[in-house]
Image (cartoon, rainbow, N blue to C red; front, side, top):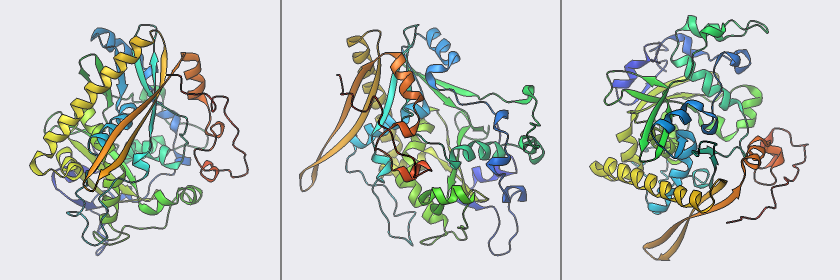
Length: 408
């Protein structure tokens, strides 16, 4: 896919680009982007469903040809790789001062980014192990669906995108018009990685591919239930700098929360960078292209050596993870596993911190994995507040698996 609406201009001009100039109100890009199609009007039957790693027959077939033992997608592995990052760099500060001049900078990772990562390593009949992210604490919300529609909007001409609008209960798209997802595959020893290709421009360095990221503004992220109920937020981004209603605020928060994940996904897919579209659910405010080396500099704060440090960490993490998977699979042949990764820090002296990465392994069969992955969020006790489930009147029942001990 290629960017539409002349958005490719932002790829080669650093900084944020306003959809509409706040002073003159002149549109810098297609005014069609000024109003986002509601998720209720979008025909989700016309886009392919996401395929988890263990259900991807094409990925498994490629792995057999490449003699790979372990397969993963960028979305299933980046949460784990981020735990390696925090264990390797427990005191690393983000370089936020160069982008935050008008708000009090916070150069530490957010609480949510430090939460444990849980995944399943599932053995298939052909002996290949697939890494699937756990769905136990996932819950679908408006941003989950909106991300899919917005990515399609950014890469489609208005007339083509309108075909995805529901006409009553009828779909305007024919089956032959549904576009399949495209992927890039990378191999490290006997580890095969899959990454979805969101967008491409041949003028960019390397593979020319980049990731599309739709970034909801601060009011939506911090009050998602209200934004979901109202199908939007009155919050506007009206200026470049400032404490609120600014692109500075959005970029500062993105560094602390999701930029590490974005950088890891780009590195897994050998992408040049990410294209960020800032919005409040109802409309876009601006667009920005962030090359991978820029993200490295912000995350590692290592000057010209940031990318070299990031690459070294990435390869070391893959090697350690591959050896760990190999050890676990050989110790319990023919089994699948639930894996829980958690990094911890302990202050040793005034200027020293001990860090570690704890991994809890639970041995199970594929039937148990399937049952756990198909559980609804309300089957999981206590981890997420009931208010986030969308219905505070429902009691959270205790899962039959909640009391199981870690077996090994």
